[in-house]
Length: 248
Image (cartoon, rainbow, N blue to C red; front, side, top):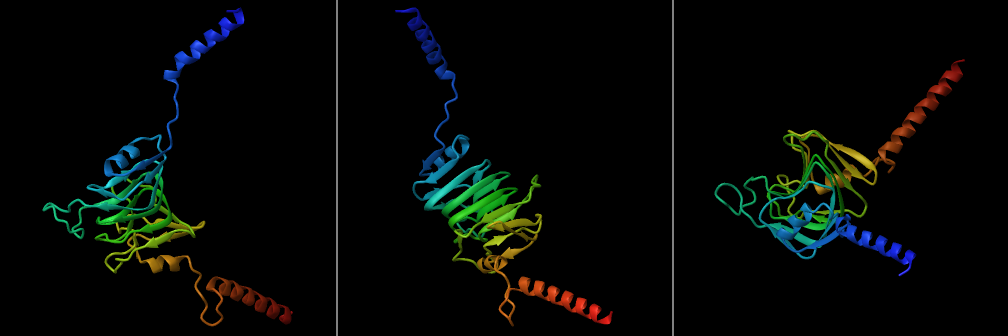
């Protein structure tokens, strides 16, 4: 073996001996098929994209406490546990059961149905983006809560876009699709960069969410009221300027 060959061999041995100590990045995606696998993936911080491989039944609220994407791929997460001290199956007995709770972090949730709980989703001091079809039907008190609760000061922020489709076939006056509890600060609802404030105590239906981002039409001209208002201001300025000029 030549001198150069010996040198290369020593370097190779050093590299091989260090391999067990190198921080090799694990795969960032994981497909889960039951509650245990879902919780395990959420506890693994190297996994940033969790994919539902099939419908999942849960017996407890699933907490999201770090940045992650939950891709339901059209599957359902359904709570099949009990409610209240008498272990009832009636989800109109309040027990604080949400299918998912996003707590003090950011998350993306896409193409999923969340059903069977007191509510589908609690956004708790967090920034959450909803993508694709999000179905919040079949929960005892409604769909999405933008609440803070104890030891949470961050304002809640919910983001939608043109491709987001909210579904709630069991919506009613007592089961809103979106609400902010009266003991929480106002929250931000965003669509395509346009932000609206949802006040404390507000309860919103699907149509009211749509209306929030739809320009209000002027019944006489068909122009939206924002443009009509600007035209009125311009008109008044022009009239005032002309009158002032005539008086000179």
